[in-house]
Length: 445
Ligand code: NDP
Ligand code: 2IT
Image 1 (spheres, rainbow, N blue to C red):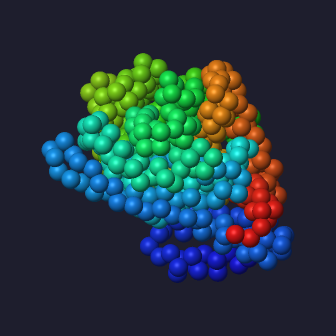
Image 2 (cartoon, helix red, strand yellow):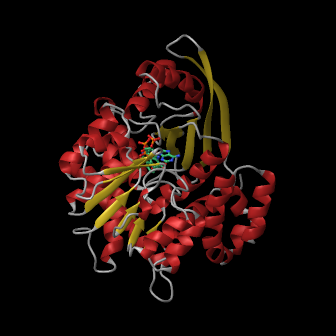
Image 3 (tube, rainbow, N blue to C red):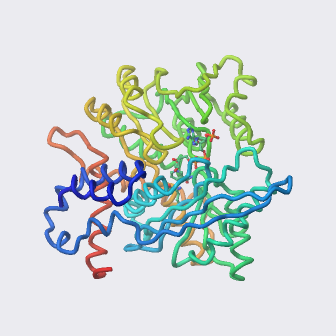
């Protein structure tokens, strides 16, 4: 494989999809050496077949708002690769959603799911619909309209969606209800469901908890621990909230949280009671993070900025892609940050990754450190197949085992001559090899 040529071809054939190109470039740059050890891969053009999604569904979603206006949005599902299991990946509802963003997410998901040890292929879907500012009735009508197209393309052994940005328990519930109505089947077709209808304990917590389990494993390689460390977290959604909870449980101090409008910094730390306030603010009131400073005036709110320039020991980007750039990475390094673990997907830009790696900061890509969410989704699928529910202790223990196993694989495939662990390389090579071997065994399609 000539990684540069493969990328140039993809850029030519699929222009205007910069996030997709970015994700592919990062993977190809780290697996090229391993790939080239296997001439049998290139004989069957494995790399192009792995980079280009198996199929893409694209549709118009029409719904009626509370005022009676008829609205349209775009809906998508990218079924990227099902070599190791049914297509699996979240659904994102956000105004920024487009084909290129979902293609990057589906591509990343394929490697992430491979790392989990569970039988799941890669997929992603979503819409440019934004639940922000919409009533629950509007969100429900949108979800029903979205599922009216999507239901024919998914199924418990075919493609199992879940949540992502803008899609939480409420949206999964409405989509599940619609699927059940259209298909007349009660099936484990979505994960992240409510506990009353097939959801798994620990699924809401899983991505955030898993990120912090991974962080703990990284710190351990340096004889360090989370206790006593100051942590910057971006985002204030599902992943950020439960990452913060686990940091607190392990004795760390959370200094910041954010949303797309700005961030809050609490010099006294966001303790348990304050985090409970944020849970209520975001999950029940559906408010904005700036309201925190009205409740806790000792804290500051900085509009239109990211939290990376505050002083701390650890950074956990848990909001969105490309939210931590080169300038921010330089500030983190200058402030003595020892670890950056991604809770979000591709939050760190390529330039910023280079800054962190050159400075030998412990840095984990989302496909490794945020794999806890999809892992517990896989465990939810297993429970649905068994028609059984496992205890939170059982699920949490499996989640911990999976995260530590992913960490071990990154160390195995990513340790460089000087002992520094390149977690990007480790995750990409380990994730890639399993999918590649499965594709080789299954013939040319
Ligand atoms: P939520 O919708 O619950 O929260 C998203 C958070 O990120 C909100 O605080 C939101 O602020 C902020 N955000 C979203 N878009 C932007 C943006 N363009 N710029 C700045 N801030 C933004 O989503 P999740 O917590 O579920 O997802 C967060 C990240 O984690 C995403 O990258 C997602 O792909 C990834 N992820 C999620 C998993 C899951 O299980 N949910 C699993 C693995 C990864 P605002 O309210 O202003 O939009
Ligand atoms: O990016 C992700 O891994 C997710 N949004 C979760 C996917 C899933 O199927 O649980």
